[in-house]
Every structure is written in structure tokens, then in C-alpha cells.
Length: 161
Image 1: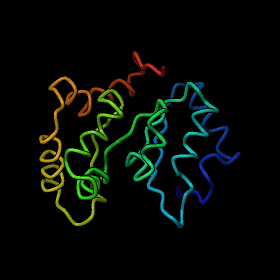
Image 2: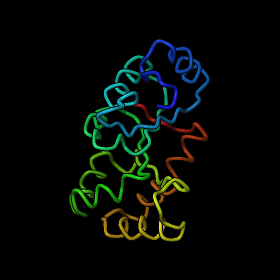
Image 3: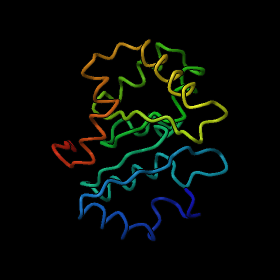
């Protein structure tokens, strides 16, 4: 997003090819809006189609374009967007939204220190309050909290099917 180039621009191809070849995960900042869609969900879908073995983490779940990411294999982090989803959809619908991705693809994140005006304990507290209202099992919560990220960083058993 910050390069001024579209994510699926030819310029980025060597980066994605290198990352795929060397099993380096790529985090993509995706919070598109009307003025800036450089890292919009459809661009992420394009990249994933070109690089089938690339491990991708989409920040902010692609914001309000999350549905386009559902059929992909990318991981999504819940940073910055989780409270917005609850305000927009309510707890029950947000729970369904997260469940649609599955606990195996969710990554806990808050976007701190760039999280609006809250202090760290308020940020974590608000995220924990939201997540505690959902129906994740302990095992699923562990995957979201650290297991999925640990798996990505260790490159062990990542299933891209």
C-alpha cells in the first residue's frame, strides 16, 4: 500500500516469486477504501492465483472486502478491524464472519501502537472482551492467539489446500 504501486503490479512479481521459492511469508496491508485500492482483496486474489505456494497474511482481514478472501488460502489478522466489525455487524454476525474463515486461518493482532487513541491495556482488553463473547474452543483460541503464527514462522505443516 505504501509503495504507490498496485499489489498485483509487475514490479512486485520478483518479490513474490522469491518469497514463494524461499518459503518466506508475506504480510499484506489491506484496508482499501474508495480512494486507494492498491492492496484491495481482488488484487490479493490475483497474487495468490499467480503464486500458489506463497504464504500470505492479510492485515485487517481485508477490511470490508473480506468476503473476496474467503475462498482463498490466505491467513487473515484481526488487527484494527475487529471492533469495527462488532460495531457494524454485532457480536453474533462477527462471530459468524470469523468462523467463516476458520480458526486455522485467523491471527490475533491489534495494530498497536497505531490503534486509534486507546492505551495498550485498553486495546487488549477490548479485543479480549470481544473474543470472549464468541464460541471458540480453547484449542481454537490457542490457534488464533499464537498457534497459527507459530506455524507460519516455523513453516511446519502449513496446508495450502
